[in-house]
Image (cartoon, rainbow, N blue to C red):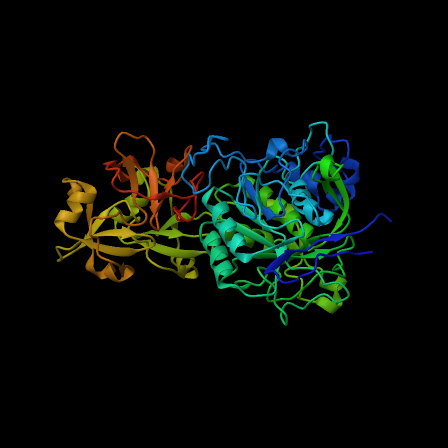
Length: 566
């Protein structure tokens, strides 16, 4: 017997299925219930994958019915907001949420993201978020229960669904922004609705542009109905963006252990990116005997919700192997490294994305997404050749050294033949690194700041002195007139704020901030050096009068900030 949570009057509902019971291995966790997971972990090649990665350094936000943050097989992997002090009644990190040390409940507007069970609660819905968290990030090798796919990752619990499995889009939008702002790398959305929302699409687009991967379920057939063809009846957030040049959601359909589409799983080439196992899974449960929840574990989960959780966990493994990968990088690596299953699904050929996810292919694919420097033998011009074999010209040495340190002898520049050079596509010229220099063009006295990607902001002398100091001329470089067309004219600076891409350090503080769209992002750990910024790029002793709200920190190498990685 299958049971799903039906759409009623709300904007979206969690998609859940539940059913009653009826190789040479590499890394094997020691958890006592691993034998109940081993058949599908072997199918997913998890032991071999764990030899490559275990999820270290990756934060996954689960936006659902709540996560039991006290479950002993999960508690150690629950995210802790180090910038917040528990129960002091103060919003210490000034993110708009008081005492949010372990996530947030957007249903009841409080700092406890655990499920809420009461009169009228649906047991499957109450357990749903905790079950997702267990599949993704249950603690391994702790002498308890099960193991998660990315067992060294951290889980950010966010409650947006009520105990009946329903919720409102306004809460979901706010929750996505919260997850992004507080450093999530991946957002798991095991939920679906059938009303298009511009606000929700915009929130997901913001997440994508911030480098955060959004993984969503294709959805399950409603009770008594056939699975939907999403090309004809789209569902959301599964169908936001597209599967070509604007793929802002990684959408997942469900398979059984025979690589056949699950009978309940929605499908459609316009929306589904790939497929993953979604039947008969073991996980965690919400534990609260006072309200009738007497088990730490739950069994026999079915649904695209759980296919989605599997993909989120696998994406965390890929991310942990190279923390610089952003949302688009992860999507490309996962979607382009699948197993074709069309022969096993002749009625759904091309409708299940690119095929079944293959974690070993993804983990052993090209992680660097890096390029190299090249030049012709009889030319001094230097180009950046990206991983797509597109060449980008550095128009002069000022531009080159705005991106790189040292001198020419510090950089390996490969000399290529003319025929090889001609085989590379010609891309955009490299422009001055945003935020690091002021520029002027030959035969012009106008001085500009540059924001990402290549936007010019004119500033008069008084504004330049206010923002960059009396010695602003030390930042000034000259660009040939012929390359002015590489830039776009933006707003004039009035001295009230720094342009996006600027690096600032407040007077009396050691913290370095990156200004982005009116907010500031802290460089943590070694991320300043990893992104190849230099000390002279930073504007120091900035007045506290320049106020910006705090956004998600920069933790690692970012290919958005440093696209010319080599």
